[in-house]
Image (cartoon, rainbow, N blue to C red; front, side, top):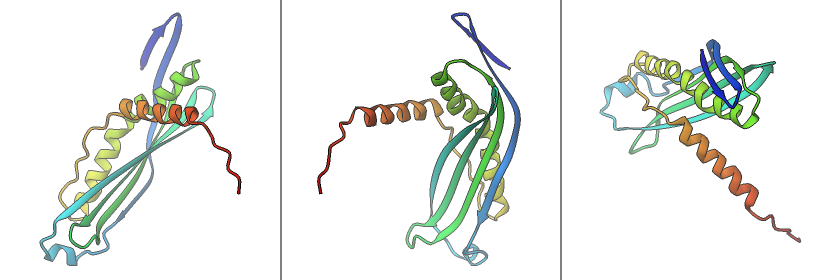
Length: 161
């Protein structure tokens, strides 16, 4: 249980359930790919979704897509997509702080589970284990806030056709 007191307000975060919501693995060139010397290129994409379930309960879903292609041909070697989810009980009255908790603290809780699933699936597919680097969710959250702020500050032009 994580607790923080700020000016008399208590903030509480408790993971209630961590679960695998969706998973997909493809290796379109198997088994022929194993007979060739291939130079892979890896691409990692991630997104984070969250929704309110009921009082103080929120679902957070960390979606990670890892794809590998041949450098020379751009043919797919493998594609793995994991939707690692969790139900979190979060007591927080400040909406901005609540979003930060979901996008930083909850995402940090989910990441090790998603990393393990991806590494396991890729290895079971016959490829070297894929170990994802740590992700700085706080930096991603700050970057998201800056983009939103820039979008709000950009004057909208009226177009006449």
